[in-house]
Amino acid sequence: MYPVIQRCSQRFVKHLKSTDAAPIVIKDYTSGYTMDVIASTAFGLDLDVQETTDHEFIIHAKKFFGIPTDDRAVTRMKSFFNILNFVLIPKFIRDFFGLFVDMSFAGLETTNYLERLAHTVLDQSKAQNEKRNDFISMCADKVVDLGEVDKDSIRMTEGKTWTTQGLTRKDVMANAAIFISAGYETTASTLQFFFYLMAVHPDIQDKLYSSILEVADKNGECPYEDLKKLEYLD
Ligand code: HEM
Image 1: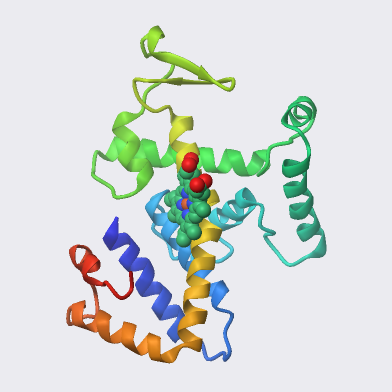
Image 2: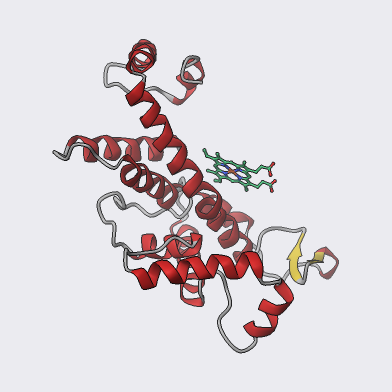
């Protein structure tokens, strides 16, 4: 996966260098970069989502996390109430109303989109029989069908069925979705604060830059095995 992340980092630098704006909103860039890494490492999408900000994947990934997909007041209110709904309304009430209306956090359309995407990546990976470096493709040979596994391998947790013999397609999709829900805002905000701190502490930025140059090759890249040598960054 490391080369995939390196490609996203190169695109991040390219986009930063290409802007004439000053000052810039660094969060827009760190969010784009994080989404790019998630799209390629979790879902195997080979596209520059840092540039294609209106790509279907980004819209649904934002919805999945409860982030407003545009600046309109109505969209912002909807996201806010959606989050409130999940924090304040007990699950059994949501389950009851869910019998009549769509009460899922991200909305049925988004859940279906991510499910379809996971299915497509799994099918492609099986059909092409080539080794791809994204999370979903790496799960492909562990995928089983609940209807075909041994009955005594089937378990039930909180009303959901799973098996000890492998991963169902739903398990794979749900774990890939965790990359979005757990990895998106956390990583984008951490990077945002990192760049802010580097900007207000140029002496530390210089020291860090020099320490990276000592490890980097002539193209400015750090091979994966050498990352642990970046002690100051750590
Ligand atoms: C800088 C980035 C990140 C920060 C600051 C962060 C922070 C955290 C924190 C504070 C927790 C709660 C730990 C606890 O309950 O004790 C957590 C849990 C978790 N994070 Fe992250 N996280 C980051 C990135 C990621 C990424 C990239 C992923 C997935 C690809 C991820 C997946 C998870 C998962 C699955 C859990 C739940 C673990 C459990 O069930 O106990 N996180 N994270």
